[in-house]
Length: 167
Ligand SMILES: [Cu+2]
Image (tube, rainbow, N blue to C red):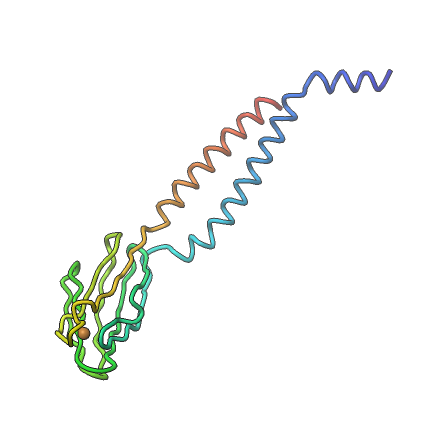
């Protein structure tokens, strides 16, 4: 008698329980997504001070490629290990000469995403034209994080509405 009553009650309201489960799952998924996002969010938000030491010698820059985030203030300390080299960064109108064993410093705000090519601006030997480097300006993840957070909030709202309707 008692068991049949319970079974009836259970059969009557199966949807709310499922909705609640979906709601809880959505919330857990949202929490997981946020906790996954935040470490990378903190590490790659633009507007940071970034400093790099780049060594120049015949016929290469080392490292040949650096990565920054959009909005970073980038400082390059260029050191020559042999003869006079230069660094010409076309996109920002930067051109410096770096005599042997000296350091030249340039600074700029990486305000556009994409690859910035720079090259040696002092003819330093036969392979001088190949003495190039690259600064990769990565799009700010802050923007993407905003979009993802909005999606999570939206999903959460839908799940909550569903849950309320069911309960
Ligand atoms: Cu050179």
